[in-house]
Amino acid sequence: MKIDILTNNTVRKRNLLAEHGLSIRIEHQGFRILFDTGQSDVYCKNAARMGLDLKSTDAIVLSHGHYDHCGGLPSFPSAALPEIYVHPAAFQPRFFGGHDEKSLREIGIPWTLADHPMIQDKVIPVQKPTQIKSGITLCPQIPYTTDFEPIPDGFYRKEKGKRCRDSFQDEQILVIEDDGLFVFLGCSHPGVANCLHYIATLFPQQHINLVIGGMHLMNADCQRTQMTIQYLKKLHITKIVPLHCTGFPAMAEMKRQLGDQCLLLNAGDSLEF
Image (tube, rainbow, N blue to C red; front, side, top):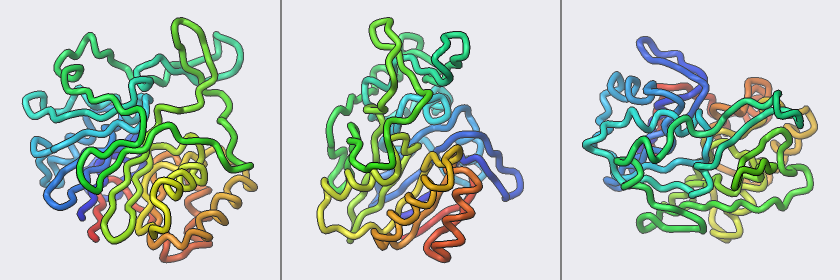
């Protein structure tokens, strides 16, 4: 398996770009997946500079309906557009802010299916755990099971014109089985522990080789961060790669406590297993 980080909040290598967003390319047994597309064409530019051909992509997975994960999709080479796996609720309008309507800012997908019929034709809705290929599963509808990861504050969606608190039922985890589990997270809005507890129920008794992606601890208090790290320690995960919205303080604390188990990577970096 080869994993290439195309978009992330940080970058170190020359001639590559960073932005607030996430996009990861995965190649496993000849099958190529693009997991999220960042918020712009940065993933396309970085892929080209890394010598990667996006036109060979076999599937696109959109983890959830936020601009920093789906905004770049219209920049994908249209002639080579593969099937796109996404929860249908991802296309609902989404906002972040306080209870006052005026304080809300849009954070949803910044394009519509009606404006992009070629994308619409490729969409495959995912509303329950679904295999897209043998050993490759998408897991939406993440339940809230831990006592320290409630539905996050400040996030809203509009359904049938009515504003509702967003419980992120559209967020989906990508899991690849290969002598253990490789777990790809978009933002972990329901909470990292909730996400991994869900995976443990779907794939019982399987060791986790890798957890990589956004863990949404950038605004978490110290207690939440510490409880998350303690939960991760219990799972004995081989490698943990916090990206994107995990936030610098949480990443630093993970590295301090987990040592070589935690890898701090940037846009342009790659992993091989």
